Image (cartoon, rainbow, N blue to C red):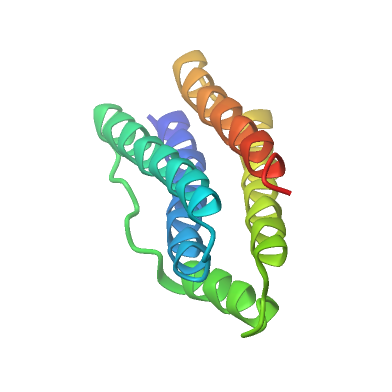
Length: 143
């Protein structure tokens, strides 16, 4: 069982990252004028919401509790993003910030995947990693 609690902890870290992404994308989307860019960011955000659902259900299915409270981590992430985005941030700056955030998420997922996970958990983390990588490609096309 102890093995499971490690897995749950790792997957909850991933979940936190996905929540942070949804959160920061709210900020990005609200500041974009360009409809096309807005739409792309909304698609990426929707992907993160789906990742959250998948992770939360899986954590529950292995007897854990999804950590849905962003708490300090989320606030810090938000602060960092808001500090970095000046009030005059243009579309390119916002997209670059979004890519930077996605890249951090991918690095986090890679770290989780290097940990001691069972095959099924690894599969789920790998799937999310794959989707987040695709999101980065999608965002890069806007630049």
